[in-house]
Length: 525
Image (tube, rainbow, N blue to C red):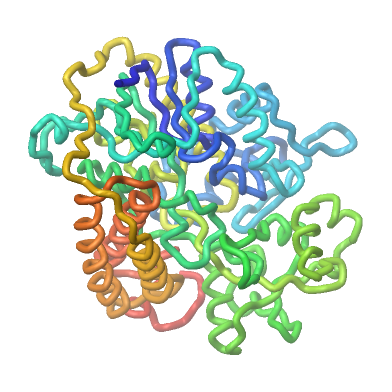
């Protein structure tokens, strides 16, 4: 049976929930979450959300910092638009129930992270994302016009391809009518149709062995749009967070927020020596691409498998009060951050590229919007500045909602969309085929397409991935669908895009650092 609505939201992070709330007063919303509603990349965001709140900070300072971090590849007009709207959108979050930390005088307690010249990061302890999701989830569940479909998996967006047309990237006017969605509880693929669709599926950290992302971050939205011949850009810029907790027994990696360095923690080698002064005058508060490469270099020099973050010189009471989650997590592993250094290592964290959009979140496919980490607005350029991602998601979700509300009554739901055809498929009982292929992809990406790359490594990765792609497509065509198989297929698509875009670039810039286009020095470009 086909499910119809005015608006369809795929994803339940800050982007999807804000968009749903903004459009729900105007029409019916179907919201699809691949697990439970609060589970998303947003939930794991520790540091906070950047916005200009008080002097001496200013819009111009925030813009300059963002452009500097983006290494000249940001779209300046988009940067100014998003940062300019930041105070209003923060007020939206507060009005929806989000609680940010304040000082004794009632002013917001602002943090500072890498690349920021001022204190401008609003936060809630060290679990800001969890607090945002708490407030938004409550409002979404209460809204009578929003129907939530938890534990539903979007497989493909529906375009003219499913109506019998041969759709290539040159096909004029590709349109999105909805999406096919797998309900694992029934094993059935259901058809969701809508006038306006938002892709808000988050990141793709699971293409790597080590990532701070939850296991659901498999690049589903980017992969679906790529297969539908939508425009995807800048996928070579994969940000590795410099400081995830070094713990071989945990996956995904536990994030040690950059805010703790803003509070005064210092990066050191295992023997207690500082090293960031060798790479950047901002030391431990240099932008993430610089810090991640520096740590990678220090590990190569020493042969150690991690470095350390030293908080022992900081006020113990304030440290625990500001970072209770990190304190408790480390203590559970026998690390008392008041007197012990924290072992840290870079982990895949954020995709700066994605589905290309305009200033209102419109993708190249008609009726399809994209926002959040799966989208590429031009905000981040070659390197995202810390805590700008939640801001971008918030602003672009609002702008996409404004556009969708203005246009949805001019769009009709397409009547002749066929249901999913599973004829001839059989149950795949060999899960090892999926698991082993996933491990191979993650190994390829981690070894050849990580923090430091080369043309030879990229070519080898492309060749290895091509074989896995062909094997997986054969399995997909003949198998009854499962979330694991669909995720593997999406992971392969996103990995392919990262490699392809990296191979096309003929310089080292930001998060794409190639040995073939540098003098092998690790300094900031």
